Length: 132
Image (cartoon, rainbow, N blue to C red):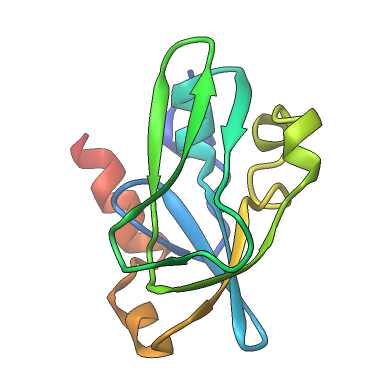
């Protein structure tokens, strides 16, 4: 497992305390898991994702990740409608281990972009990690 100072934590994404990341892409946002999350999970072997068109409220479970160690739930950092899922993950879930920020999981059209303001920047996320 990586030490905190070895983690890849880009500045251009926002984070949740549940270890998801969010990146704005026009009027949608892509959501994935942080380097910390993939490191803690170990080898990811299956990703359960919602269907395009499904809607979720902020904080609602939208899918699960199965690794050789555990099954973990993923929670919507923002409320909105699913506009895309990363279909590559169906056959190659290990992409999340290889490149957690390139290996996005879902894209949503948020109900309220202002919810982004509640998410953590890199420095705040590091503070959360150091407390765990």
